[in-house]
Amino acid sequence: MDFHEKVVWITGASAGIGEALAQAFARQGARLVLSARNEAELRRVQAACAPAEALVLPLDLAAPETFAAAVAEVQARFGHVDILINNGGISQRSLALETRLEVDRRLMEVDYFGPVALSKAVLPGMLARRAGRIVVVSSLVGKFGTPYRSAYAAAKHALHGFFDSLRAELYASGVGVTILCPGFIRTGVSVNALTGDGQALGQMDEATAKGLAPADFARQALRVIAQGRDEATIGGRETWGVLLKRLAPGLFARVLRRARVR
Ligand SMILES: NC(=O)c1ccc[n+]([C@@H]2O[C@H](COP(=O)([O-])OP(=O)(O)OC[C@H]3O[C@@H](n4cnc5c(N)ncnc54)[C@H](OP(=O)(O)O)[C@@H]3O)[C@@H](O)[C@H]2O)c1
Image 1 (cartoon, protein in one colour):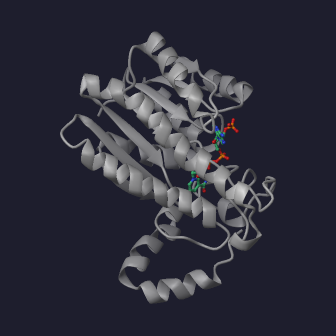
Image 2 (cartoon, protein in one colour; image 1 turned 90 degrees about the vertical axis):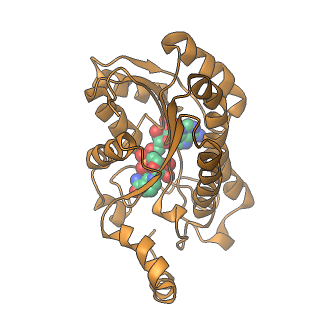
Image 3 (spheres, helix red, strand yellow; image 1 turned 135 degrees about the vertical axis):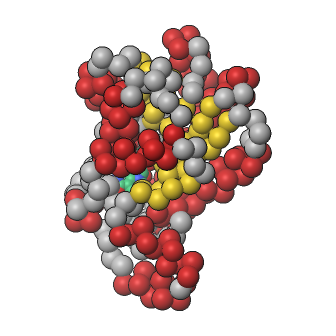
């Protein structure tokens, strides 16, 4: 797939992976819709994407009642959406028992129901044109749960269930589904991660700090999307965990027990 002139809508475009994806698509001549809550940061990313055309469209993933109007705004500006990238999200750094249920629910709202609702809002337009791709940024934690990530892992696993089903339903419709599973990527994800009482952690993880640069992630992600692949893991050695879990689940469980990445 050639991204020139394609309309690419990216959530979580105000920082980190979403910002890097926006810049990578801009370099390929795509037309962008940049969404997240922080409008000032979206404007900064818009300027960094110039001369590519980019619509700043503030959106809260926990407010699905606003999505129909957002889709109408994109429709009015660009006429259609070629690629929706469900990237916006928040992580978690707290033990399950020390996490308030409101925090479990908040993570499900933003990380699961947000992408599901936005995809449902965008899909009819793609199906009418018999063309498009829904991309979902999950996580390695969407493939296996690790300590301190119970609700986050649940939300990311749920994405796989929903979007694998959707992909099968959309077979031969002209619309594809790609799930990306990042490992450690050097962004503010741990700084913004929720702790048990719903406050942000406010600290950079060591593993995240040593992770893949967002621009490198974006370069690999664009290749995966262009190839129309169903799913891909992108990151460092931590991505081997997916294979280890499949080939040696007992050994993998012992390794995970000792993992205290917070
Ligand atoms: N970095 C990693 O190591 C890693 C690993 C696996 C998966 N991921 C996934 O990658 C995606 C991007 O994360 P990141 O690493 O780039 O982290 P980040 O730097 O914290 O960026 C998160 C993005 O999501 C947006 N966001 C958060 N809550 C939102 C809400 N309620 N509504 C709309 N947008 C919201 C933020 O923008 P606003 O605050 O402006 O709304 C920001 O643009 C997430 O889905 C994350 O789970 C990251």
